Amino acid sequence: MENARTYERYLRNKWVFMIGLIVCVVLFSVFAICVGSAGLNLNQIFRTIVGMGSNQSEIILFNIRLPRVVTAVVAGIGLAGVGCVMQALLKNPLASASTLGIAQGAAFGASFAIIVLGAGLQSQTIDSITISNPYTVSLCAFVSAMISTIMILGLSQFRKVTPESMILSGVALSTMFGGATTLLQYFAADVKVAAVVFWTFGDLGRTGWREILVMSVVVAVALIFFLLNRWNFNALQHGEETAKSLGVHVKRLRMAGMFVSSLTAATIVSYIGIINFIGLIAPHLVRRFVGNDYRYLLPASALTGALLLLVSDVIARLVVAPIILPIGAITSFLGAPLFLYLLFKGVGSR
Image 1 (cartoon, one colour):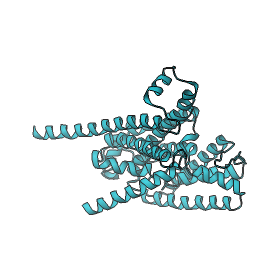
Image 2: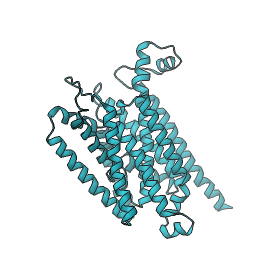
Image 3: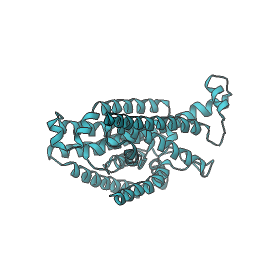
């Protein structure tokens, strides 16, 4: 009887933690909508939503602020969910879209589109750079990211590569794509190099409602697939042999999971650029509160990813307002020290 009460308390604490995350995401979303050089208070936001706001407030809310906040939530959920699943499938705490070469592949595709295909011929002012053909850049970034994925999965399928070797293959591909991107920049004109650097910074403000819809559909389908396999991920944590004895087709699960994860990450990165550490750090943060049960770890990681990206976006807009700092730089500055703290704290606890 006492064990039953303890288990109920254990589950209740997990649900309380996730509800707290949902509340934090909602509150920070509202705060992020209010933050900006053109201040909007809650009353103005409410009046604008119900159709009683000014034309200026409608443009700011529906064309700038709201798309940016929704992009942060959707991208954060997708990247963190993908990182959580990749770490489960490869049984490696360092697995993420960045360490497997997906982000670097996207950067090469974007560089190719800007420099070789001419999508970097942009109108340029003193303090801003706008890529003239973002759809071509996004398409090339997506294709290149998926090429990296197919190469890793191909090695796994035909050469029987272990999960550890898949991580090393991703590191090798990251280096290869990084070198190829550097060569493209070396022979490019300065203005095109500037456009490439601008894209790789990462920007939540370059998506419209059409791009958000595509990202949302892909992320939603991926999350449904992940949640349907939550028990398989739990079984896999106890070893491949144990998972097989419980009826899990480990090879099929790993291939399908990696493909869906890579497709999701490639879609997000192709639209908003390189966002570091979200997929890597979010699962490690919530493991300390919900454990390794993927029934709770997966949704908690996704919510934490959304919260981290929202917080990073608010910081990017407030530090030197009205200038908006690159979101990729902010996530790196926040993520790297936090990851080192968790790493050394974990080492010390052992």
